[in-house]
Length: 363
Image (cartoon, rainbow, N blue to C red; front, side, top):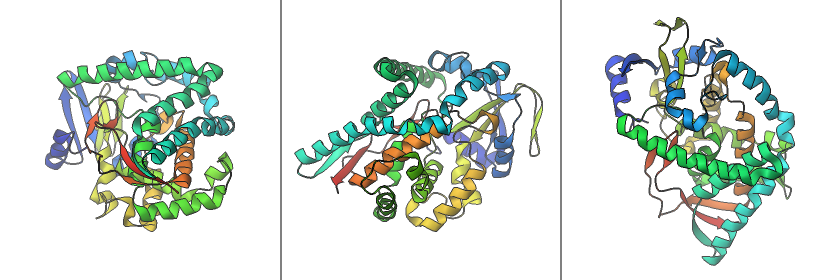
C-alpha cells in the first residue's frame, strides 16, 4: 500500500496515526492506529454503514442498493435473506461441489508439467478467476452456473472500465472485495517458502490421507489457517475499509460528525508499533510468530468487514480457499517462477499486473 498510496504514508508520518483530509466535497477521517481500529471493528451501530461515495462510484458494478452498497433497513433486510444461505451447515454441503470444480484445474496444471518434462512455469491467476466464478455460480445458480460465469466475466470487464475511469481523477476509492481470488494468489505466493510448505503439507497429508477434503478435515488444518491469516496481514486485499457516519460518533479521542467518511488503513497490518520489528517480514520467520500474529489479527481484523457488516460470504470464501490450497499442497511443490514479474495495481482490490507465475512440480 505504501507504494501505491504514497500520500497516505506521508500524511501518516507528518500528521500522526489519525488525520483528516478532503476529496472534493467529501471529508475523510483516515485511521492508522491499532487501538482506534479496535473500536472501528467492534462498532455495531447501524448508523455506521456503507460510504455514499462507494455507492456513487461503484454502483454500476455492485448495484446501487445491493447488500454491498445499501445501508440501514435495506441492508438489514437483504442480509437477513442472504446470510442463511452461507451458514456453515449450507457450506458443508457445497464442499463436494468445490472439489469437483477444482479437479479439472489441477489436471490442467499437471498436463502442463508433463509437457514441460516434470517442472513447468504455470500462470495461475486466470485459472483461479475461472475457478472462483464457477464455484460461486454453482453455489448461487446450481445447474445454471454457466450463465453465472458469463455474468462474472462481464462484471470483470465493467470493473476494469470502472478502474480506468477512476484513475483519471483519483484511484483510492473502494475497498477489497475479491477475498477468494486474490487471497488464493497471495497465499500461494506467501507459501512458496519451502520450510513452510513442508510443515503445512505434512499437516494436510496427515489429515487428508488419500481422501478428498471435507468440512471436518478443513477445520483441523490449523497451520494452513495460520498461514492464511498471516498472508492476509502481509497482503491485504485492499488499502482501506470504508464506512460513513450517519450520526456523530467517537473513535478514541476523535469525534466524527455526521456525514464523514471513516477509512481504516491496511497500513496498520504492517506497522512495527503493532507487530514488532518483523512486521513486514515473510511467513518464514516461524510458526510461533505466525500463531501470535494470527491470534492478534483475529481480535482486530476488518479484512472481511467490521462489526455488523462482516461479509456474509466469508465462511464460503475461507472454506474455498482452504480447500483449494489443501489440494494444491498435497499434489504440488511450488515456488516463484523466474518468469514472474512483480508489479501490483489497484482496481477494486490489489492484483498483479502481469499475473502470478509459479514454478510447479508434481509430488
